[in-house]
Amino acid sequence: MNLKQAFSLALKSLSGSKMRAILTMLGIIIGVAAVIIIVSLVNGVTSDLVAQFEKMGSTTINVSIMGRGGNRSVSIDDMQDLVNDNPKLLKAMSPSITLNGATTKNGSLNVNPATLAGVNEYYADIKGHEILYGRGLQYADSEYRLRNCVIGTYVANELFGSKNAIGQSLKINGITFDVVGVIDETADSKEASADDIVLIPYTMAQKITSGFSRGTYIFNAASKEVSSEAQSLIEDYLFKVFASENAYRVSNMSEMIDTINEMTGTMSLMLACIAGVSLLVGGIGIMNIMLVSVTERTREIGIRKSLGATPWDIMSQFVVEAITVSCLGGLIGIALGIIGSYGVGAIMDMKAVISFVSIFISFTVSALIGIAFGYFPAKKAARLNPIDALRYD
Amino acid sequence: MIELKDIYKIYSDGDSEIRALDGVSLFVDKGEFVAIVGSSGSGKSTCMNIVGCLDIPTSGKYFLNGNDVSELSEKELAHIRNRELGFVFQQYNLIPKLNVLENVELPLLYKGVKAKERKQMAMMALERVGLADRANKFPSQLSGGQQQRVSIARALAGNPPVILADEPTGALDSKTGKEVLEFLKQLNSEGTTVVLITHDNDIAAQIKRVVRIHDGKIVSDETKEGN
Ligand SMILES: Nc1ncnc2c1ncn2[C@@H]1O[C@H](COP(=O)(O)OP(=O)(O)OP(=O)(O)O)[C@@H](O)[C@H]1O
Ligand SMILES: [Mg+2]
Image 1 (cartoon, each protein chain N blue to C red):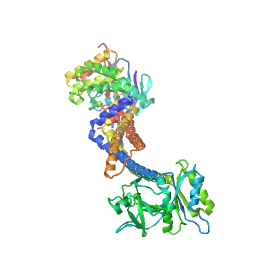
Image 2 (image 1 turned 60 degrees about the vertical axis):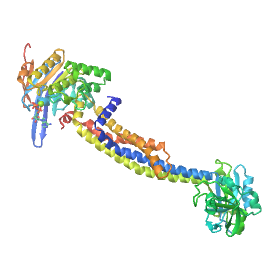
Image 3 (image 1 turned 135 degrees about the vertical axis):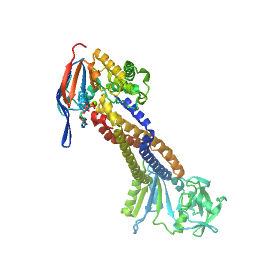
């Protein structure tokens, strides 16, 4: 008897008891579907996060200077020189002087922007900001300490509502600024998002914070490929100045993306393992049914053996039957898993990214479960003594 | 070609033991027609099952075509059951969820005969027992006599040199019983070795060689002259 015959025999025997076959498959179906849904939702979350960070630019390098007292310090001009001297590694630099806790007011309306920073004309480019209305900050704004500002869509909506924000004025720490530009929305204009932002010339920020010793900078590497080289360059420079690694911190966006991938990868592996347990339970269900089916068909096995079925024939008949059940269950589970991923994703407002690896793995695992859990009952059937099997009632 | 040498089959049940076969020696040559006769419980089926390689004796040797059966592997035994022997059971032993044709095809399936040829050979066997028109029926849709004929068709589908029939007429009325017997006789005349179990003396009387078993022992072995 060859495999094709064993397969058609298995289909025949399954179609003879459809309800039982479906119930047997249920464990596998649920297990496979659960694995696929979980992995694709976690994938969706990951790809969203990564896309967001990538938008911020994996070429972005953040530098914070904590300083270490004494006369060791770096100036904004030193940092700009670093960019000018290394055009192959660094494209641009902007200081980013945050004004923590400063309230931004328009009459009685006020907001606490998530980002309220003094920056230069390169900042928008580094961050990938698109200007919706008006203009971005320019060299002259910093050079002449102009009281101009650029705001995000959330701030514009809160302070000026549907009015055109350009030309309006707002107050930061009591100082009046004119709105010269609105940044296009990137995060649905939500509070505390990237759209909750106010940017002013860094020279103004220096004035408000009275001096700029402990500052942050943001650099743009010339390309993704050289971003870690650029990072080292900055680190080396700062180490030369401060002679201590504790005086500054340099971090790169691509490092963060790696961390996210690592974290969500671990998470999805954990969740997939939990779902995998239900696959195992499904496998045990298959074994149970196959054992029952071997017992029920003892006489049939006896007849087949008396007609010349070898142990291998009997064994392959039952193993193929178990594999057919589990693979069929696996296929149904994959279909349900794909539908379910999009369904659950839509309900929970999450993006589902179907992972072919998870489909492949869960299908392979279910086929293996068929072999593993079908083997034992099949072995039992194959070992039966023909005359004992024939006498069985 | 069938040779039993001092075969014992002992079932021990706690302290008591049942000697189903108590030192049986028997030789059946190629082309013979042998009837094994005995009262119920005398050990006929036990003997037949050993000859059919379905059961293993407690002691003694069984040679089939000169080979010691006890030395064969499960796989080799399966091949012998498949190619050398055709077994007709007292209780038909058809598989209920397979139709008549599929039942008859089974030994050919295990022999590795291709689907088309298998079907042809099975249909030929069914024609010989006069049931070609019931090929697509299921065993439960046939009468007892018809089921027995199907099981005979199954036994001879692969043209085995030996047919072993364990009371094939037991469940049949005397008329259909006779038909089955005539059929076996015809097979024998074509060269097939036939071993037939019966407790019907009328039937035994029509067969050339009659072996009588009582309490697991052969008590007589007579071959009539002529036919
Ligand atoms: N599996 C078994 N376990 C215990 N005893 C058995 C077993 N099989 C058969 N026997 C005993 O062996 C003896 C011979 O049984 P066997 O089936 O060979 O008789 P038989 O001649 O075929 O009878 P019948 O004409 O009723 O079919 C009987 O006493 C029976 O009880
Ligand atoms: Mg009997």
